[in-house]
Image (tube, rainbow, N blue to C red; front, side, top):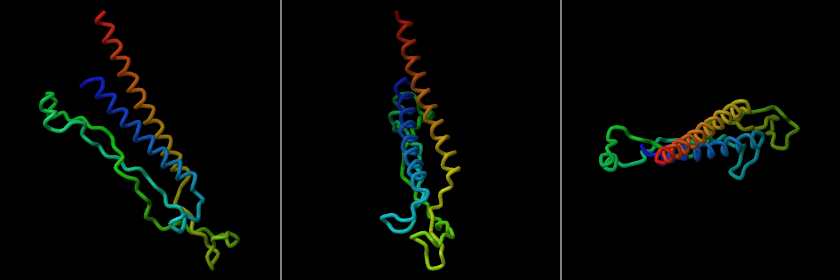
Length: 145
């Protein structure tokens, strides 16, 4: 495997985790949003990842990597939560129904923060992998001197 392929795999991970962090931060920012353009409370979203082969099978065969498929991460979509909103009793709220309940988003702030930490750690791991591959390439060039 070349240095460039390893950097490509890690950079796809960086890109995917950046999208995930953006989605998670939108969830946190809208944890108390009771009105959206679609109507009703904000619905929690989550990034959906998939492993996508870097090369096709023919290219793998030509490169001698047949049977050792390399995958990269790709964001295949943003999933919107389908659960019913949380009903909170607050008769003074402007969006309260006739019984005094307000439909709130199904967002657990603690869960979103834990997900944000894991996304940050995954981002850091991919950045470290890119830096290590870069250092290996530099060391390889130094051997030739």
